[in-house]
Image 1 (cartoon, rainbow, N blue to C red):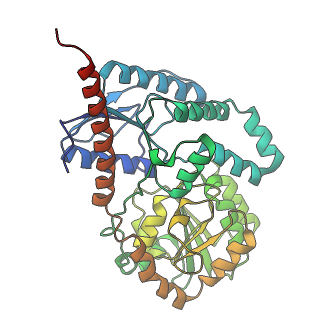
Image 2 (cartoon, rainbow, N blue to C red; image 1 turned 180 degrees about the vertical axis):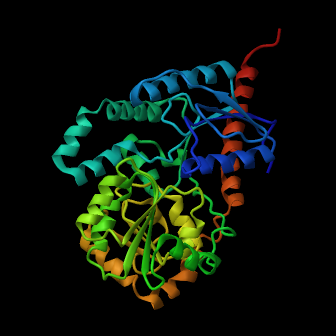
Image 3 (cartoon, rainbow, N blue to C red; image 1 turned 90 degrees about the vertical axis):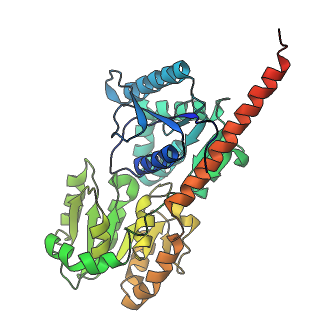
Length: 395
């Protein structure tokens, strides 16, 4: 599917980290678009080079998060105004875009969930935070912008939140799920890595291994996962893959609960595949997550998944049928479902069920939907231009 007239498309993303799901989505989309004739530019502070993609470095001086985001938004919009791109897609909350990908969800909703979990101290801290005030303001300006033509969400959950919070018509919101490489993430990883990775981490071969993957532990619900583990038999372990500046606090929590030898902190990993291979189930009791790629990867590997009802994967998971769901802060509900996952026969039953959920979620399908959206938007712009020109009399 070619794009019309080699359009100039700009993507805005402040920085690229190979560990981020949103960034992996951008990188995959770029490759697909270049292959179909688009001329692409990435407006960014820092980005890994990709063939055929122009990188426009925008890195104004800043101190602190508010200045950082404000300065980048201002500089990026100057580039957009100067270059006259045919279509601008932003992965940041910036009002000068035609398309916004809401990969980070709705900040307003995240703050509500965070405040509910943290009580009055969390609410007071959020009220005092200049950064949260800035993001809420930027988010509102973005969705009220007359330039915004479409919003891309990676879950129906986020689509519904945007409609409810900002009144954006559902007709302007496109749900395009992330793709998963089901040839790389496969049940075969269990045969390849189960013994090797357990030996490397010092996890007993007979252990029931729950895997937690994600950076930003407070948001991902690691505290709840560790507390749930304390109620399970001693052969149950939790392997934590991801990074967080507060990791020492979670280590202390594990020690306090007598779990120092049962919680393994593996740190951030460029390749998570071996960890899916060693695990028996994925546990992710997130406070708020639009739709984490780790759920798709775990499902592709045949792992049963246990998520919270604040995770966009509720679009495809049905509690007790093809996975498990509990409320984000429901400790007893989480414990009960983790106990159910100790049943080896149940896990064996869920392996093909999990795999079947995402086998069709290939990059080609994601790219086709993305390209279809671009074609519609670019065609609409061409029609508007033609109408304007038709009104201008010839000299």
